[in-house]
Figure 1 (cartoon, rainbow, N blue to C red):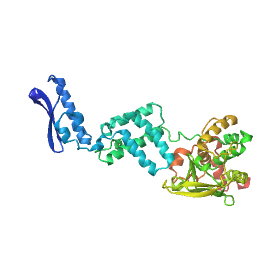
Figure 2 (cartoon, one colour):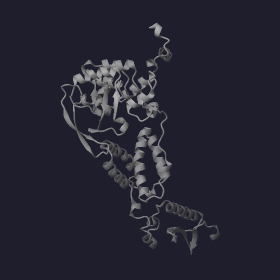
Figure 3 (cartoon, rainbow, N blue to C red):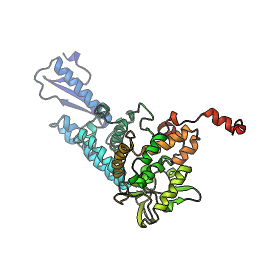
Figure 4 (cartoon, rainbow, N blue to C red):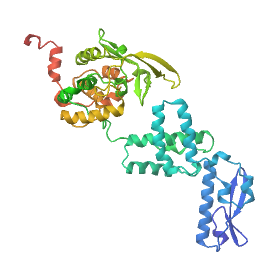
Length: 407
């Protein structure tokens, strides 16, 4: 029988025991509870030793968990330190505490909501006990639940943060998240569903009683601001003579903040339809109250005060817009206008798509949108609108002077 025993498995009298090396010391431990030595018990001993060897290699071996009655459990209780007992929930709490000190509150709110998924799955388990395959399976299960790839990747921002902390603190000798990629999207432009020019016209005429609100929406179809930038726009940001607006702040979850990326702090040139609408908007806002606001700076700590006269308020409540209010109103407005439902954020996509459909240089479009390069425009914002696309041959002929005599 002993000739057939696997490496690391041996007989101690009539009892099976295993041996392994920990911190340079050979440890021998009997396997309690095994009544007979047979093929099944020998296979069990071999598997247990292999598991222990893997845990030692990955820095997550807990002597007392495997051998609670062994004197060596006390001897090696400090091998991994108390931190090895850190649960996923404890890791989440630690990570979120750091994020609250470093990130904007709107970002933290998103992290907290995504952390619920992680806590529900792994919360009470120790980080050292969760394998790479456990985490990969969790990712797959989230997708099977019908969550969008972006949502799953946002959840994994929390997972990556918790496991990176554990690795940095020496709890783990390797970070399994280094071998798990984010979920890819089947379509680079799945979120772009722009309005056509006919739809823009319908939106503008859809409800005469709410003309200030529809004017804001149509203006943005020809400007391409993000909704958070649009609703934070003030009269002080507009230069009608130069035909530009300055994007200086955004409104996110009830707070004003400077744009996250420096490229988003920009000057946006207004094309004719946007400039005509802005003249109307500024004139309508002349009697709007001036108010002092606090604007959170890029470090998410510093605050600067600004005196502003906001341009856009709900024409029914008189309140400044927020994302939820705008979404509710816009959904109902599209029904009245007879336009297929999309979110108000599609105004930004509409601007990009209308520009690209008219052969406007993509570099200019990217600058208008506040992107450092053209990658995002090409991948996400620009979708060709065939019905709004002019004849390229006609444009080129005019550029070359062949049509001068015809006009």
